[in-house]
Structures are given as C-alpha cells and as structure tokens.
Length: 191
Length: 201
Length: 203
Image (cartoon, rainbow over all chains, first blue to last red; front, side):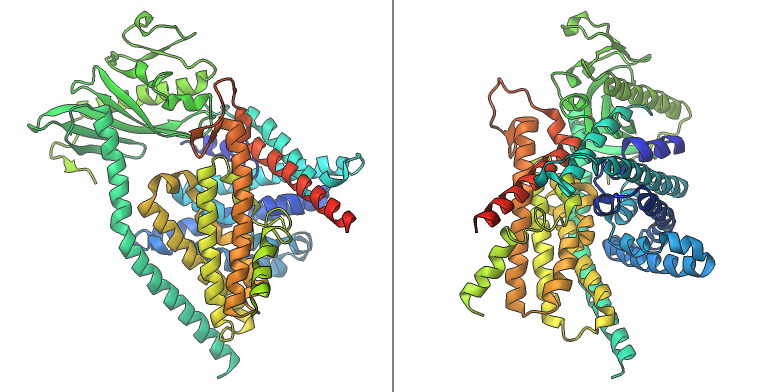
C-alpha cells in the first residue's frame, strides 16, 4: 500500500476511535472541553508515533529473527508502559511548558488500548518501517480529530436538554455513533 | 532482604516463570498454527484450480504469490494467483485460478475482506459475484459490465457483472485481478517463475 | 467464607457492579467484537479465562510482591495468560482468531482485568478472588451477549449464524457497522441507568 493511502486511511477511513473502537476510555473521559481534548490528542499522537518506531524495531530486530513470536504481547505492553514513563520524564526535563500541557494526560495513555492496538495492528499487517511510522502518526491524528470534534459537540450539548437517563456516557456514545456514521462517508475515497 | 533486592528478585522470577511458560505454550502451538495457515492456502488453491491434488509455490513477493496446482499425474493444471490490494474499506486478499497459459480464469476466491456487510461484502458471495468470474477470457484485461445485466449469457467473454450498489468493491477486485495478471505475465516473461518449485509452506 | 458471602461476590458482578453497564470498563472490546454473537461469546470466554487465572495467581502470591512493582507484576501475569488465550484460539479455532484479529491480544489492556487485580485480588483470599473474577466475567459475558444478540438479530437477521427473522425482514446493516455499536451501547447504558433509578426510587 502506498504511504499516502495508509496515512489518509488511518486518519479518516479506518479511524482508530470510530472504526476500530480503540481509545474509547480517553475519548469519552477527556472530551468535555476542547482545550483538554486537544492536549490529549497531541499526547496520544506523540506517543503513538514513538510507539510505532519502537514496536517495529522490537518486532523486526528481536522477536522475528529469534522466533520469539509468543513474547510479542508481553514485550509490547512492557515497552509501551516504560516508554510512556520515559517520555514523561523526558518532556518534564526538556520542556516544562509542554509538560504543563500534556503532563496529566501521559500516565493515562499507558492503559490506552489505542497505543497497544497500534503496535499490534502494525505487526499484524506486516508493515515496513516507513509504513509503520506513517500509520502511527496518521492514527494519532485521526484520534485527535475524533476527540476534538467530540469535545466541540459536547460543549454544545451542555446547553441542550438531554433526558436524564441519557446524560453522560450514554449520549456521548450515541453522538459517537452519529460521528461514525458521518465518517463512513470517507470510505472508498482512497480507492 | 532489602526492599530493592526483593523488587528485583520478584520481578525477575515472575518474568522468568512467565517467559518459560510462554516458551512451552509457544512451542506446543507453533506447528498447529503454521499448519492452519498452510491449510488455508492449500484449500483455496484446490478451490480455484479444480483437479489440483498438490500445489507448489512458484513465486513470492509482497502482496503477490503464484502457486502451481498439479494433478495426480504430476502435470501442471493451472496457476493460483494470491494477491491483495486496497478495497473500499480496507485490504482485500484474493486467490484467482487460471489455466496454464494464463488465458482463462478458473475460479476466484476472496480470502480476506472488510467491505461493508450486505453491500461490498457480496464480493464473497457466489451468486451475486464470484460465479461471473468462472471461465472468463483473461488474455487481455477483464472489464466490468455496468450497469449489471440480469443473465450471465449477456456478458462478453472478458466481462464481469458489477454488484449493484457496490461498484467500488467490484472495481477494487477487478483492479487487483488485472494488475496481478499483468505482473504474473511479466514475471513469466522474465523467467522469474521458479522452475524448481518449493512445496507450499 | 460462608456460601452466602461467596454468592454475594458472584452476584454483584452481574448487575450492581456490572463492568460494562455500571462501571463503563472494557468498552473497546464490547463495541468492537459484538457484530456477531459467536465473536462476542468467544471474546467473553477468552476474557473470563484471563481474568480467572490472573486473579488466582495474583491473590495467591500477593504477599510476595512489593507494592512498588505490583502493577508491573500484574501486567506480566495478565499478558502471559492473554498470550495463552491468543495462541490457543489461533491453534484450535483459526476462523474465530482471524475474525477477532488484534482484539484478543488487546485483552491485556482491558481495564476490567487490571482493575480487579488492583481493587480486589491483591487484597482478598484466593477463594473470594475466584468468586469475584467469576462474577465480573459473568457480567462481562452477559453484556457482550446482550449487545451482540441485538446487533446480530437486527443487523443480519441471524442469531449464532442461524436465520431467526423471516424472509420479510430487511436487515438493518447499520447495526453491524461501527455506528450501530455506539448507538446500541448508548441506548443500553441509558436503559441500565433508568432501571437503576426506578429501583432506587422504589426503595
């Protein structure tokens, strides 16, 4: 597959949140304000791109050559967990303002299935190095796009008269469903 | 024991136990998983190249493999082209059977697809799509008949009926088939098709 | 442990603390694999297997693990059982393994499992942890079955692959597509909340 196709597909067509259902927890949890949604999106995009690089290196330099396929899940999850810690320490050292903006979101990312999903999907699809990186970056942007749209809708939703049992996650899920429906309009555009 | 030593000891032993346990599990299931994959390919070859009893891989690159199907006497009865490309939603992987001169198709099988259920996913359905791929003239490029016609007899020998409501998926399959046929002809012309074929594995 | 208490540990997972409907945990697999009942069931059973064995191991070695490294230890233990489930499905049920794709390995980041280790198994006896794991798994399987039954029946007219709707029924394809997953779960959550409000106001 061409790189451009992978990139567009990751953002719009096979969107991580709206098509693969990955990263639902932060998508519902951190989408009440546009500002925080934007920061969360940035943090996820950042970590996803790095994870794409690292997981590819582990998979192709260590696991595949030594036929250690059965250690894939254990090694990916451990690497992602420690990677997020490292990124957090690194950002705190290098750029305090960026840390201020992303800080509280970074620990949340460890348990974000989107990151693990990215590493697994890239391995499953047998992507090359460049493809994996583009896939990681594009998927992060796709997540950012979805969470920002969601936050914008929810800010408006605060003013709406939502029936009591639907308040909170229920209406958020239904809004997500309508967004997924809208995103289905992009399907086929790379063909 | 000091706390830090205890932490290291505990984590290392958990890691070692888990690693050795998984090595055992991995070892026990490895053959079976490989066998499942091999069987999937073999069954698809038998399906698209009728009369095949054994098959061999003749060529392999990313997104394109060519297999040769042989009958009981060991003569080549046809090629099976295993190819994938972008569909409407995601990658489509298919297997096309042709005769030995690459001029007629035998059958087409869709091995993997994520097209829209009920619409594009009809590419896996024999009656609405796959039957039109049987015994077609593929010496040139195959084309789609749009809008679809009601009876197969109305189609030209090199035409395929379109799935109503899923033109893009039909076109996707068509373009994967046409481009892989072209590639295979090129491979044969350049003499890259391995003569000392390896067994499928 | 009395039988009554043990029963209580089990029952709470079904409704009062149902991981999906009440705690909103494990939503990714809940949405992703419930297009067909068979996939929902396979996912539920795989998660059950991982949760039960992780809880058994964690509750039996809880005293050995220093609290500073407990999360890392839990993750390794969970990942080990997830790998076992993944390899088992790939070896013996290749079609299911293929259609669930990356979602079986993703059980490792299912918050239900790590959550129960942290909140329950690390503090309770092996027996109680087992009951808790069984209850939570049953609640999770129940949620997956309800969601996948609704989606498969309306979206394809079938249940477990068998035709249940007559020929007059035109399948609502949207139900087995991603939007159907979000909307159905949204409505079910609202329903669960409404039932809870009713029972509370009656008390």
